[in-house]
Length: 409
Image 1 (cartoon, rainbow, N blue to C red):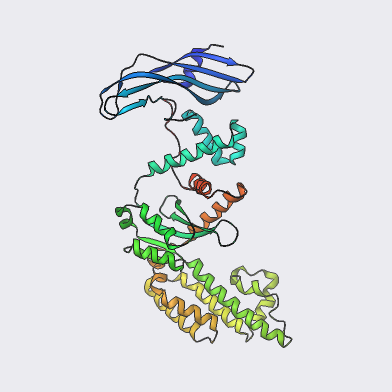
Image 2: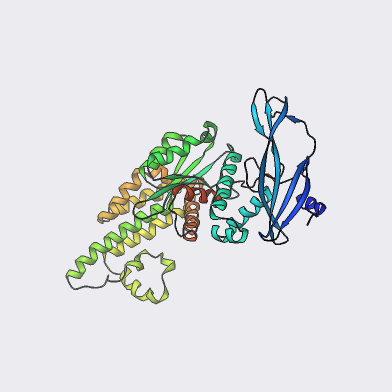
């Protein structure tokens, strides 16, 4: 087999290289394309001075399959020397420096690994898991280099449980249009976990940040206040509602224990009824729940406060929300329900950062959606034993990076 013209057409413009020969290795089910170099004068990329060839290195690259055979490019690549900047290996037009695969092959591998599991991509490409992982890691490094110091306006900060016990990572997601992206993944959920992200940004990028959505976790709040003092901190509505739901459930559990001691089982099995939004209550429970709501139970009063708090997010503007939140905290404080009073004290303390929601109208819903996508990656990989590979996978799939190598000309 020596169809040089066909394979030159397949490879496209490879000047100053050309296809010199094509060898079919039937036993190995491989096709090997030999590349030759036309006469060429090399200039140093640093000083533009003329460089002289002083050796060759035999290189081999995996290319896209042809005729159902694995296909390789082989070439003796010159090593050239500049008197000022030393020895360098000549770049070839079909692959990146030090790569073992052609640019077109890596592009296909990246597409496959984004569409399916790494193991499935390995089977389709007939490469090892280590080779596929190397392509993925190079793609992420390439994407991070190209990312540059682009402006960030709105960010979401949240933690994600990734292992047994209290094993977390800190995930920073951009909420800027047109598509949210994971900007950073850091170990743990301490202040240092988030400090490292701010340190990776330029002073101009930090100054351009308008708002950061996060929960009430003190290490995150302290870090954001220190590094981006000009940004508005928006306490996430989902986490605030969860505080109210927890207080409601505490009231229910305390009251249920008291009633059960008297032989009253009204609250038994009712936990989820109170936590559902009123509009989401299943029809089969409506009659029972109507009787519970109409009772004089403390849990019924706590539920009314919970439902009333949900209306906060429908306020028109900051002024309207300020009046509403103040009134709700007053009602909760006067409810004689200790868990609700605790929540009211917490909300009063953080009121300015709760009310910034009505200025920016965004919250951690984007981060929660991203956390679900991260969980899908964990399940698809059947877990990660290596934390750095986990971070690489998150950025590979969810970082919005330009992962592709430069295409062959």
